[in-house]
Image (cartoon, rainbow, N blue to C red; front, side, top):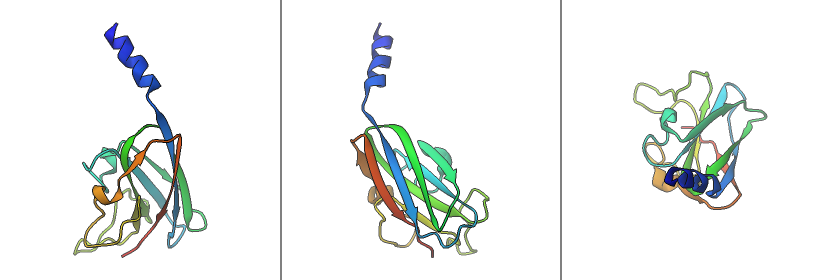
Length: 137
């Protein structure tokens, strides 16, 4: 009986949608990869460790994506402009990115990728809209 109660409670847990609007792509070439992380583990570039991830086409240097049925909680979003569709961030021989990216809260650029702490936000409504600016090195 305890297992059934836990399942019912999980079904009734508040959930919402995160609508991500991405702007500032330098071209429509390739695709965008967007990932939703529930912790710092793997953030921002280890998309396989994300709670949810998706890809999409870029049109008129913009893209949109929706993460639906997400339990209320703390998250961070990362975006990659995968210009050559090789499913990874390309870098030069010094490790400096060649492709663009962005993060929730649009943290100010600094040396290295954005930190989870700078990009985290709390989902506690049926719909949370966010705009992410894509930046290039």
